[in-house]
Length: 436
Image (tube, rainbow, N blue to C red):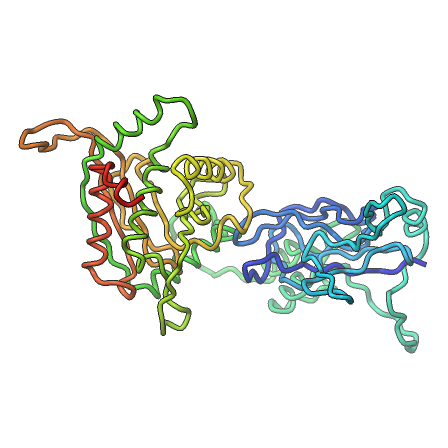
């Protein structure tokens, strides 16, 4: 007789407490294999597919698209043939000191050919067929109870039950619109709307096309920016810089065989050199505000436009990379942002941010810091402008540099020194040779 296994939403890393269901990849009654992705969820960092560690028949799904599921809450239940389904694995260690994976699961054991194989239920196996045909039994037999005539409410999602409870809706009075009369959140919302009594004479109001909910990445960004604005005493300084020589250097570098060097890669190189000169700006304030954390490595975040909006991928250990390597990594992460394939690890852990808003055709900005970082360099568009060069008026390629910093980690003198050094490197890129 098959045993029902419950698979809960695993910890997806970086302290995330939940995820929003984007798309189910299986239906109730489907036969699945071990480690087969069953649902696509959106966290505050990225959209990821979640594989199930059990092979068998899907008997229930929890959460509709758009609903939030907490870490540790049920995702699916699977009917597993005895002795063939896998046990769930969580972060920790198995007996004997073998480390357990967080997801990916599956206990591997060697076969006679020396290879490792998964212990599970392959799709189409006789065991799965038996699991489909046989009645489902719970993993632990329940204690006998007195016969009763329970009333079955066709609802699966605990979020739907909670919504009904909070709104005072009796689920027995709700007609479900889902498969086999399943009650969905929309059914509860309709019941709430039907119960409401409209006001006798509503006051005229401006036309509203609708409310766009803050979900997933957009909600995470809103929360992070609000916290940054609330907690960090930020200040901004700026300066115009003549980038003519920097652009000439780029053209010279790109005239030789090899990978092309982008303006962003040159700016990233300038940032790593400047942070080595002003290390206090590669830091963050502790959670309780009692100290300052100095970071030895420069994990350089940069703003990139993705299909889900603006994101900030992170180049790890940017201070160790050559200019060509910086350009390659910036290009890879930019493309991943464009197609929406960035992982949560690639979107977290930054210590300093470079924001090239010049690509939007604007000159200046006063950005909000990327909490908990202490500083951000902004670069406007590089455009021809009248400029006094060597005592004469000339048309030069000019950009505006802005620098926003946490006033708790340094004073204006340090911030001004950093920005002036960056501007000097933009105007005279040969200065970088002294620092490399």
